[in-house]
Every structure is written in structure tokens, then in C-alpha cells.
Image 1 (cartoon, rainbow, N blue to C red):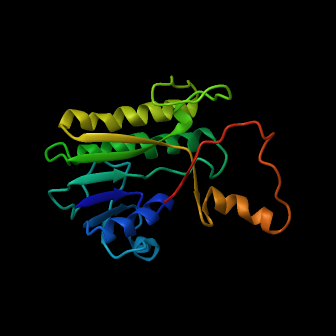
Image 2: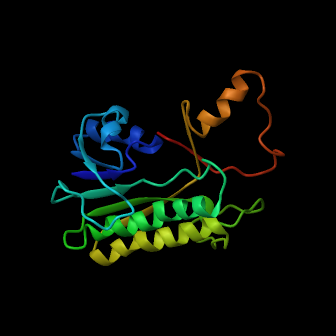
Image 3: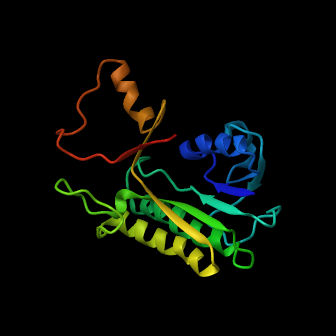
Length: 204
């Protein structure tokens, strides 16, 4: 049994059919169960969950083997007002804390959480890896606090992973959904000065 939060996002929608094809039982946590059934690519159990609440959602199955935690407000959606920055922070850090609290008595075998390369200092001179130091800006602080909550799963005896993802490419989705429209009408151009590094991963 694999519990997935953020299942209606780009990564979740790609991941769920792969899990089902490998005969895993998938349970999707969502804030909007009424629309999730339409947006999800597979039929699966859907459970309503408020990521900002510490209340256990009704119907949560027992004996979950793995949790894949993908939920989080989009950082490219709108201006970073103080309110928006708090939403970005809470949707990652508080949601991770609340989700992990649901498993304090019955931890899963594996806990996988999204994180982001916003953790790192910007560099055009050297390759960054897991040992590279963090930045001290807003996104880096979000990532540091996010991962601090994530790795509390270690104390439960759970194998724990944080995926520091960069730009995610997918057909007409994610960053491509924002980039392709101007190119299709002949208004596309270079992205920046051309000397910057861009860490990317394909959704597959």
C-alpha cells in the first residue's frame, strides 16, 4: 500500500499509473476529493486530507508500506507577497509535519518526500551535490525546514529520502505549460543570458 499526497500534480499524475502497473495499491490524499477523481489518471482510493490540519483524515487505511509526499503550493503561481510566501512554506513544512504525525504509532517502511534545488546556493562555477552547503534565502530556508521535518521519519525506523528536484519537464505540463504558448505564436526567445546553469529532470 502506497499513500501519495499531491497525487494530482505533474509528478503524481505520472507516477500513479506506474505504481498501478506494478500492482501496488495506491491511496491518494487530496484537499479536493470531488475533483480529484476526474484529475487522477487511475482509479484508486481517494481520501480527503487538509495538509494544514493535524487531524487524522477519516478512512485512512492501516499498514501503509510507503508514503510519497509531493504536495506543495506552486512557487511560480503569483507574486511572492508575505501571505503567498507563508502559503508556500506551510504547504511544505507544516504539511510534512502533520502527515508524519499520522504515522507516529505505525510508521511506513519507506518515506519519500519532495524537496527542491532551491536548497543550494546559486553556482556557475562548480557542480553541486548532496554535500554542497545551503543558501540562506527564502527558498533555501523552506527547503531546510522541509527536510528537517522529512527526516524526523528516520527516528521512526523508516527509510527516508528527500528528492531535491529542479525544473521538471513534461509534455505540455509543468514548466513546459508556461514556456510553450509564446513559442507557438512566434514570441519565444532565449531564456536569460544563456550562461546560467539549469538543473532539470524529466517527469518520467
